[in-house]
Amino acid sequence: MPPSPRLFPGLSWFILLVLSLPSLLLHLQLKDEARRRWQAEIDVTAERVFSALNRSQNGLMLPVQGLQQLFSHSEEVTAEEFERASRELTQPGYFQPFLGCALVAKDGQGQARILYSTSAHPLFKTLGPLPASPVLARLLDRLEQSQGQILGSEPFDEPTGHALAALGATVGNARQSGQVLCLVDYSLLLNELGTEWLSDDTALELASEPWRYRVNTLPVVAGFHETRLHSAGRQWHYRLDVGPGFRGGPDLALAWTLLIAGLLIAGLLALVTRLVAELRQTQWLQAELAARLAARDAAGPK
Image (cartoon, rainbow, N blue to C red; front, side, top):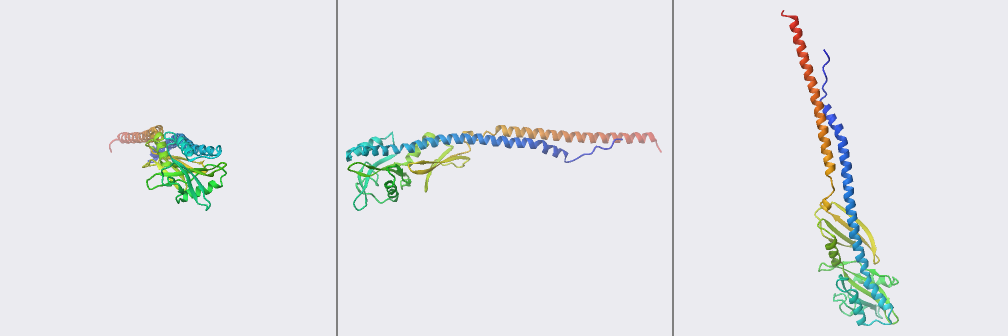
């Protein structure tokens, strides 16, 4: 009689584990690749948005540059010429975010005074002493040392909820000298940009310490892309956040399909192994029982 086949209760589990491990590793690899492809889509979208935003920011300097050239090519610029040039350079539909420009110069006592203005904003609308503003004071100090470079102030939030900033440059000719300041509504600029470039699954943040502004708010941030760029003498931090539904999210269908298929196959093989072992055990028991009965019959009654 052959020896009894041995049953190993943990053999089927061992087979299940060994055969499932490659499927799990492949699943993790495919998930990682899917997330990398999804992140690449986020990066491409972010670079397009950031490029558009950077172009808009650099475009804000053009009116200031135009006014600079007006002064440098004139012996004297009158209030009417300044107003006409300012309005033409910041006309609606071309540079929508502008709230007007002003010519500022210091008097004999060193106090900054508004000489010309095309703005209805409280900071610029009244000719005479420049209203107290730490932001504008810091910008004027930088402009006086800038050798004609176009510089921007840090943005600041108003009680109305709008975020403003000033762009300026030192100007001069034979009879005049001072600084041109143009006021920009950054919140309007960013919201218009968001309308054109952002979807419900994306949010944009623009920051220049200590100020930051967000367009759209996401309940869950599943991915992001950020970078730092310089414009008008300031460093800007751009960040694009995306939600889980951006472009349908990472395509994990193949990763999950292969994992499920691998686990099913491993489970089936483990089950077959268990059933074959149990069948062999049953066959051995039947054969042993038959052999004992045959031996008893051969011995006859006692």
